[in-house]
Image 1 (cartoon, rainbow, N blue to C red):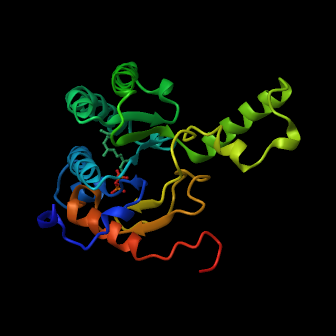
Image 2: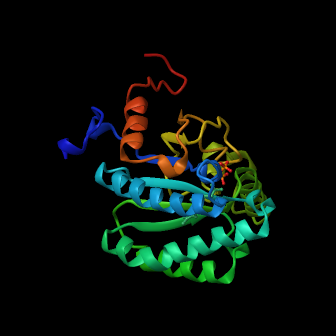
Length: 244
Ligand code: FPP
């Protein structure tokens, strides 16, 4: 493994959960005089590369922001192309993911996706549900504010049904009603392509995450770039509000 290391990463301290905003596909394509969809296609290749490297480095959870609740505002042609890429990815990849013990999960309201995507996703989730290796978590039709709103509605309903006592509500109650309830909060959030904002991603969960921004567009992000992000993360001083 040492030969494949571009940075001096401590393999005992890799983040448990990396969340990634895969940005810059459109600009990558434009700079090559290609249609935007070509950028998304290249972005799928990067997903393969990054997931392989995360598995190799023993990152337990990888959440990818693949489609936000706001992405529906894009031209129909682009939305359709993204949905096609998603279903094709699942069809082509699910057997290999299963073979490699990857557990596929999703967050966000997948019921609003095209039925082909829903079908392939449900199949993939079911097939891999007992896998114990890396968890690939796809954020699809996901919005952090919507997720918090949905959690609140569930909590209010549970209070009304006397399942939760109002006085007992704490921060864990909220965490446990979010769609991310089964996975730890991200240790590291990566956003590619030079934008430095959250864009409605995991708003509650990133309270103490480290952020890593890079100018590299998602299709150009590779093993070396991932290692650079991990190296930077390992050189941060995480104090969680406390002191040393
Ligand atoms: C952001 O780049 C990227 C997206 C909104 C979509 C990401 C989706 C994929 C890589 C493929 C589909 C997903 C899976 C899981 C197979 P942008 O279009 O906003 O780029 P720009 O800011 O340069 O225009």
